[in-house]
Length: 411
Image (cartoon, rainbow, N blue to C red; front, side, top):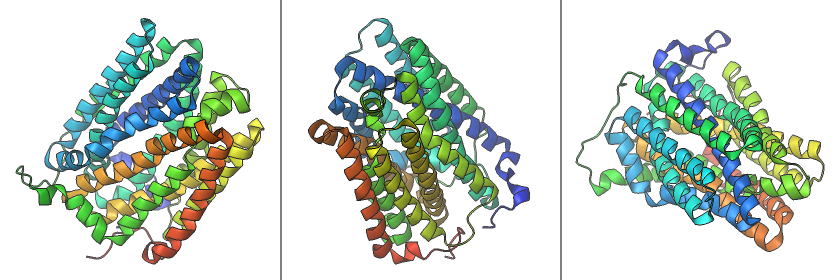
């Protein structure tokens, strides 16, 4: 696979299907960020509990774990475009349910967790499908460029979404959930406007061997195993997003707008790096760049946990986002390039569980530790753990560390 040159920096957008996919993914990601900020702040307003903030992540993660043997096979054997559209429709229904609870003044934790569980189910099915759909929309030569723009789409939504969510929630929770609903509906429509792409599928008669193919491939391919597991343990230990309502209200003494600003800060750093990578992709020492990114993420987490100054906290979060973007770019490119299309859905299902574990389960870890030891120790200990993981994985997966360029392996 050739690496895009400066003249090819918008190569992926030459393909109309990808442009629609990009816009749809941006809108869906924007809506998710609005919902995340609004539910977190509303839950903390209603309960004042760090544990409940952690449970928000757990209820969204569990469906990915419990359905891991199903979601990947569905993405590999059925129309990925249709799966994504259906999932976005379900997401819109979840947003409307949160809106209805808010209007009826029935925002009770158990009802919210039930809605978030359904939201987690749709994300469990959408994750492998959306990750596997993108490579079907562009030729291999434009794939690295598409991955970089995919990341910038998500991270741009991670900047604007939390700020918009905080501002909208400052107006009213009704405004926030209404905006998220509208964006998810628009995202689903855009996906359905994508012509059905070519997709290599297996037999519709699925055996246990077929279902477990993703696990088998990851276990055999040490580069993919190392990349996925590194993200799992690094972010599982370093995740501090769930505790941001506590830092915004109790540590830094900010309001909903401040929570939106904190949530946006990692995205500011991340989108800057993502745009840089779209113009100037990594050409050499990609494996080292990934490990450096994880180590810097851990360092930024420690600084954020110790800071009592708004500007320093925002700077630490920007460092976390920038370094995370570096490692995610390398990891996602490697997974795509080293995975055959016929098992890509199943491999991405496993990857999404690992990503979900590193985010939602990481939020549960942080919330539980914060309820016992306090928010600051929970974040600082997690950041130190991330630094340790980077060092251990660099020694344990030398093949991953020694990868030079992001090109498809010779098979």
